[in-house]
Image 1 (cartoon, rainbow, N blue to C red):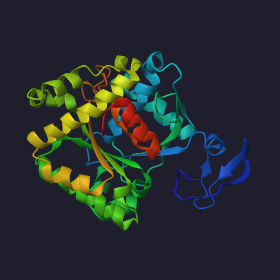
Image 2: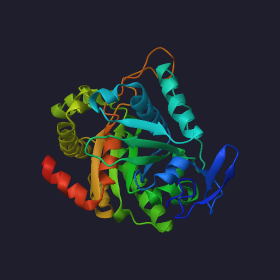
Image 3: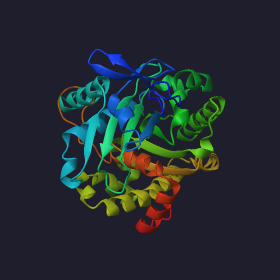
Length: 327
């Protein structure tokens, strides 16, 4: 089994904790939630790692995702859906971030350290396998040099799908900075003994509410962001098909607006697949002044990409035929 704390493949021992039997990782001596160990096969881990520069929206994305899963009525559209934290730290993160956003406030920036993961069981997501999200978020400084990535972000090696969260409005030179992030990541994973060609890359352009004018020449893409209501989740096949189709449109935006051809070609050469998403975690909410609540746009899309790409290959090929995406 994969220890969510040290990421070693281990056999968990059992000891007596203060409130009953407890599972302990023999490699790092961390207490691992009983539900994680006991139902490992039914809810296998899905590592969800966020890569990106400082202030580009990684921490706010996770906060908005947890807010969406816990506060919005996703179950209205996914009747069998549930999201459940597996330990106290995870409960504090999920409910704490949801409460911050509901009060119009933002979470603090993540420090540069090896993060403790948020463990969130997901079940009932249409056309996806049930599993346990193992969410890692660490400071953007960790992705500025390969050495820092090796020291503070070893979790990236275990991710089957990696999210690059990039705020276009905060890039002075988008083509150069996108390529630098990619180059740093590929070098860092190689030094960790991993292989990016066994991973799927999802490029997530954040803060899309600040891109409205630049999206106008890409009409369908602008409408996709503007109409990003979760109500469409009631038809999951249509939602997923549109999500796949918009990935191509976003890549057209990256080529035409950001001149990111070198970035995209290098990414395709170094990953099993490359997909794109565009989100607004806050929907234009004032930046943490307590005056409004967020209206997340397309916030579930990166999660759905991660779940989709974490499926076994035969399952993903079957979904391609079902959805007619060809991607």
